[in-house]
Amino acid sequence: MLSGSSARPAAAEPDELRAIERSLARLEGYVRSRSYQGPDPYDALNSPFVRSLPGRLPKVAATQLFVYSPIDLRRTFGVREGRNPKAIGLFLSAYCDMHRAGIIGEGAFAAASEELVRSLIGSRSTGYHGNSWGFNFDWQDVTRFSPAGLPTVVVSSFVANALLDLHGLTGQEDLLDLAKGVIEFIQSDLSVYEDRDGICFSYTPIDRHIVHNASMMGAALMARVSALTGREDLMDTAVRAVEFTVAKQEPDGSWAYSIDGSGRKRMQIDFHQGFILDSLLDFITYSGRTDARYTDALHRGTIFYRERQFDVSGRSLWRLPGNWPADIHHQAQGILTFSRLSANEPELLDDALRIARWSVENMQDPAGFFYHQRHERFINRIPYMRWGQAWMMRALASLAAAVPCR
Image (cartoon, rainbow, N blue to C red; front, side):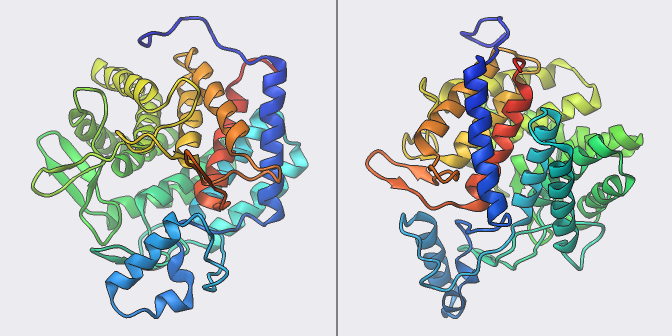
């Protein structure tokens, strides 16, 4: 049982459930009317002008300006909107949850899922083993340039899990084959860091970064595919990757975002904690391993996430120890993680409902989309498709599917 919680199963009141479903319907209508495409916080290099800037630092500065400006500069600078494969994967998983919850009809579900699968098949990265996906824009930071389509374990894992979600509903073997192709990409194209605790997959084929949430996503996907195919070699690899991250958990239950080659930690505490918890939950579920070291790590991580990263109103805190702004990605991750964890800890559904209520009341526009960030004195209302809409649709659909009162 969680610290400070009761053991009673949570259930939404009928009016509250209907409010969630109305919010989800408005959001789904918005993203469908825009054909699932829109701006992204990091898409500055889709601007011909920004791409033409000389050198690395001007491009980094322009990207950061686009990320943090509450005024959308994209039309002025000619940024093309597009479909982001990660967003498409999140939308597909959301539709699967909506179908399971009985809040979307068979015809609408089939039409949406078929369109999204076609989009994913058409946006696969080229030049790598199996199947993989990356972002639909170039990206520049202070150390490296990542071209559009450079596959990552994060994007590819989200897409593969969405395909497996649909496979679970339809039984289509081609969807499982597509997901198995992501395993081939992970095994053949990613670097692997190893120490006495286990292994860690790199983020992309061109780096050797040690990033816990990214590696855990690859491990959880391996466990899921192993459970579906009986491939024990995949489960063995997943165990080694999970052991690495579990061993690196901080005493307070959190994880560093990353570790560099010298062992120095980057303590960026934000929604990525939820990514790790989701992946650890999936690993335990698909592997059937309920060893105390896994369940205790999940339990301690959940307590940290619940008690330190959200206030009592349901508002997420910014990267700890920061308080503001409330970011829609953080809100969505809290809803999603607590909804999923509530299968084993029913009281966590109350947390998911509280975060969803605050998000809808404070960050959803009458047009259906969700704002990017709410600051103490102003609101950034830019409707980012991947960062905001895809994550909130995935989160609200998961919550609707988890609520026992229908």
